[in-house]
Structures are given as structure tokens and as C-alpha cells.
Image 1 (cartoon, rainbow, N blue to C red):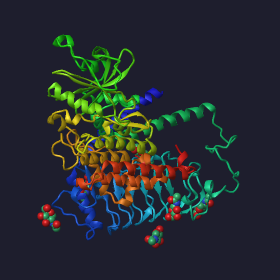
Image 2: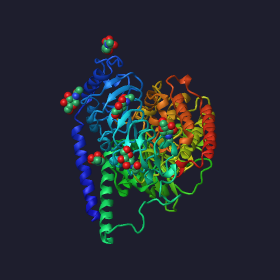
Image 3: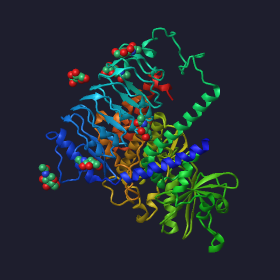
Image 4: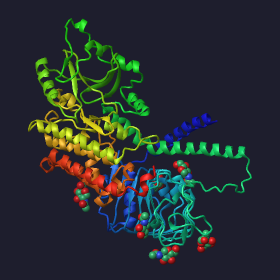
Length: 640
Ligand SMILES: *[C@@H]1O[C@H](CO)[C@@H](O)[C@H](O)[C@H]1NC(C)=O
Ligand SMILES: *[C@@H]1O[C@H](CO)[C@@H](O)[C@H](O)[C@H]1NC(C)=O
Ligand SMILES: *[C@@H]1O[C@H](CO)[C@@H](O)[C@H](O)[C@H]1NC(C)=O
Ligand SMILES: *[C@@H]1O[C@H](CO)[C@@H](O)[C@H](O)[C@H]1NC(C)=O
Ligand SMILES: *[C@@H]1O[C@H](CO)[C@@H](O)[C@H](O)[C@H]1NC(C)=O
Ligand SMILES: *[C@@H]1O[C@H](CO)[C@@H](O)[C@H](O)[C@H]1NC(C)=O
């Protein structure tokens, strides 16, 4: 039975996918017309939008993939009622922020067509009418704020459809009735204060603080037991009174339970596929450049699919280096660096079973498992055409670098047609795959502590490189070059390679990390490294991958995007959802984001030196630890 349901899942997913493709026919011009109609209804004097330039350049409008995806007009003096056929036509919009205006009337019903909506901020207006019945169909919603309006009616029980919702603010309205049995697994912020609700607080909301329910005759949970309720029923999650009046047979109950589970699975799968289809595409592409294998099986599959369509281990091996010492007649050998253990030779390496880890800027990386069981990472360089002597000198420079936050180079091999570098293998893969690789169910969220310690470690590694000489730089800082030996042990890889390879290889470099002043990608200044590191910081905090101009149009210009959001909205709009639960360190998160913004300043001399970056992160880390300790009993901390 469950197998049949699974098959239905994928069929459903397919149908939804096709449906979403056909609606994607709408375009930016249509978005512009809809926005202009919105303007003439509620913002004639407030919005100075110039019809002869692209809507993407209008104040408050954000675009991605040539569609309008966000509209942020907080406190801009919008007034009146929003008609249908305006915002409802923005079918790709994911963020709508119209808070603190004078908008009134009921919400246009065709907002239901904005099925990509994730953030809807309408607080502080004069909206009235019933809490819109279409809200439950906006199944991607993560933040919904209708506070400080004049909404009436009751809270629709179908809000349970919003499985991704994290913030639900309804306070200061005229909502009546009882709070329905909401069971929203991701809900962290909830407020219905100062409405006209009555009755008891549903079981699943009883963990919320008392001031989520102020100003009404409610009972239960934080407000104390309801009349006739036993005092502290702590730990009794379900509300089924034993010995109740159920007349159903055990078999019937089991049947209902099974079909409920199946239905739930179907819905979750659809929502998941539907909401994530774009993010997935983005994450998959971002892994093109990932240089190391992520830890989880699911991610590993993605990774393999990405690499030139190499699906099986066998194919990967076939693509592995074909160095044949006998063939060329030379007796070239691996050259080991100073401290590296000489426990294998070239033949061992070539006999090892290899698996493609990823294609990076400078060539393909393999995981090689030697017959002895030793695992190393082998990088096969592309586009390196330099005499062995020069190559050796550059490698020796790399070999001199010795720091706990750099991935150590063990040995290298140089011949006319093959150049190999052998590194320590980092089992947990790259920061890039950790951040973008396995979004969705089954993913372990990346904690704030892990993120700060990764930032710290990477910053120290880069600071060390910069300390070796006044002009020394890494030249290719990005999240796929930050590898993890362990959860709290991050290291920078690929240092020095930018100086080895030809211009053609380096020009492939991901644009999203490149400082604006960089013209020759072989000569990256320390301040350009700082810029790239700033982008990595923003990536760590937002969970978004930066734009990769040459690979695809996806991804965002992270520095520009973060700065386009007003600072007060950072905590609610910019941060990775997985960081929502760390409310006690919000200040520290904002400081870290500010550091990222400073590092990505347009002018190099405005960017801090790496040593300053390191000490700032140290400070943020110290104050996070203090804040978290102070907040240890915080209620949200045990909601995992
Ligand atoms: C909104 O979309 C509808 C149907 O797709 C269309 O008829 C209408 O003209 C659009 N509104 C605007 C202002 O473009
Ligand atoms: C609108 O943009 C065009 C083209 O950039 C420009 O020539 C025109 O002056 C602008 N109009 C206003 C009112 O700013
Ligand atoms: C719940 O979400 C699903 C999937 O997005 C949608 O098809 C359905 O109409 C929603 N239910 C309600 C009551 O809106
Ligand atoms: C809110 O709506 C009620 C009717 O539901 C109306 O009587 C009241 O005047 C409205 N308040 C404001 C501030 O608009
Ligand atoms: C809540 O208020 C409504 C109308 O004011 C009333 O009919 C209902 O009985 C109340 N419910 C409870 C549980 O007090
Ligand atoms: C809920 O809203 C009320 C009124 O705005 C406010 O006093 C209270 O602190 C809020 N509670 C939470 C948990 O946000």
C-alpha cells in the first residue's frame, strides 16, 4: 500500500512541475504592468517608478532570473485598497513587505496565485475583513505578519497546511472565536495578543510564552489551567483522554491512522518539491564547483550526478588520471613535501580506487583510497603549462605554508601532461555542500556555533596566508574551498593554486566571490581576498549561494542583496531560517552580518585587514557564548 502511495507521490510531483512550467510563461514586462497598476491604485504620489527603465531598477523591487521576486515598500505612504489584478499577478514573488502603510480594505483574493510567497509582511496597516481564507494555500509561507490591522473573523484551522511557517503574528486585530488546533512543526514566533479570542490554548501552542496570548480571556498552558483541567499536565503531549467515548474498533483506527500518514506523506512531498524546486536547482549547480565530498549519502548522489554526468564509481575511475610511467619511459616519482609521511608512492596512488569529488576552478578532485586503507584527496590540475623548475618553486612556496587551518599538501607529481597534487582528505566535505547540499527533510541544521567556528577557522587560515608576506594572497576564497575535517575543524584549501595555473582556468572563477576591482584573476590582492571572505560570511549567515555568472543565472549578488534590505529587517528577512531559533544571539548575528558587509565594501581600502576580521569574529564568538549561556533555559532551545 505504501509503495503505491509513493509512486503516486512522484506522479503528483511531475504534474505540479509541468503546471509550474506553463505558468512561468509570464514575464518581467507583465510584472511591470501589474506593479504600475498597483502604483496607480495605492501609491501614485508615494512611488516614483520610471516606466522607461526596467522594473528591476524601481525602488523597492527585487528581481531574480528576470522576474520580480520581492517588493519591499515599508512605511512609504501607500494608501487605499489593493485591487485584484495587481500584486496577484506577480507569480514569482517570494517576499512582500508592505508594513507600516495606510492600506485598507480586504486583501485582494488573487494573492492566492502568489504560490511562491515565503514572506508576507502586512503589519501596521488598516486592512479589514476576515482573515483571508486563501492563506492556507500559500504553502511556502515562512513568515506571515498581519499584526496591527483590523482583521476580523476566525483563525482558519486550515493554517495547518502551512507546514513551513516559522512566524505567525496576528496580534492587535479583531479576530474572534477559539484558536484552532494548530500543529505547525516549524513555528517559533507566534502572537495572537489583543484580539477577541476566547477558549483554551491548543495543546501544541502551550509551549509559547504567556505574552503571545495577552489581553483575552484565554486559559491553558502558560496562562494556567482551564476550569476543570488538572493543574500541571506537563509532558502529556496528546490530548486524548484514556477511556474516552471512542467506539471505533482497533482495526478501523489503524486504517485511519495509515491513510492519514500516507496523505500526510503525499502533501509533504508535494510541498517540498514544489517549494524547493528552484532552491534545489541552485544548490545542485553550486556544487559544480564543490571540491570535496559531503558527508551524507543523499548529497553524495547529487554530487556524482553533477560531475559530468558521471554516475558510477567505475566511470569515475575511467576518468581518473592516466599517468603511465612505463609509457613515457621516464622514471618520475611523487615528490613529498617537508613534513609529509612517505607512506605511498606513485604506483600506489595510481592503483587506488578513485571517486570524483568535484570539478573545481583548477581541475578535478578525486578521493583516492589506497590499498593500505589510507585516504587522500588528489587534485589533477588543468591548464598548467610551466617548466618543472618553476612549478617546483611555486609548490615549495605552498609547502612552506603550515597552519592548522590550511589543508596540508602532502606531495605532488609533475610531468608534461599530468600535474597532480595530493592533499589530506577532509571527510566532512566543503562548507558549500554543507550549506546548500541537502536542504529539506533529513537535513541536520547547521548551528550558530558551528557557523561561527567555521568562520573563525577560515579567517585564521587566510590571515596566516596574508602574514607570510605583504603581497601573499589566497586568490580563490569561496565556500567550496573551505573544507571540514570535523564539525568544528574547518580548513582553507587550494591556497597558492591561483599562482600556478593559466589565465584561462582562472577566468572561470565564480564571479559571485570576485571583488569589483579585480581584472586579472592571477593577481588577487589581500583586500580582494577579504572581499571574497566577506561573501563567504554572508553565505554562512543567509544560507544563500552567491551568483555564479558563468555557470548559470541563478544565485544572488549577496552583498547587494543584503544591503538592499533595510537593517531593521535583517533579522527577519536575511538570515538563514535555520538561524531563526537563535534569538538570544540576534545581536551577534547582526554584528557578523555587518562584518560581512564591511568586508564586501566596494572600495578596497574601506575593507578591514584580515587580522581585524579575525579579532572581530573572536569577539562575536565570545559574546555569543556569554549570551547563549545566559539564555540557556530559553524555551525555544529545546524545540528541536
Ligand atoms: C493580471 O493577469 C490577468 C490574467 O493573467 C490579466 O488579465 C490582467 O490584465 C493582469 N493585470 C495587469 C495589471 O496586468
Ligand atoms: C526615466 O528614465 C529615462 C531613461 O533613463 C530618462 O530619460 C527619464 O528622464 C526618466 N524620467 C524621470 C521622470 O526620471
Ligand atoms: C494546502 O496546500 C496544498 C498544496 O500546496 C494545496 O493544494 C491545498 O489547496 C492547500 N489547502 C488549503 C485548504 O488551502
Ligand atoms: C475595524 O473594523 C470594525 C468592523 O469590523 C469597524 O467598526 C472599526 O471601525 C474598524 N476600525 C478601524 C480602526 O478601522
Ligand atoms: C467565545 O465567545 C463566543 C461569542 O462571544 C461564544 O459564543 C463562545 O461560547 C465562547 N467560547 C468559550 C469557550 O467561551
Ligand atoms: C505579542 O504582542 C503584544 C502586543 O503587541 C506584545 O505586548 C507581546 O510582547 C508580544 N509577545 C510576543 C511573544 O511576541
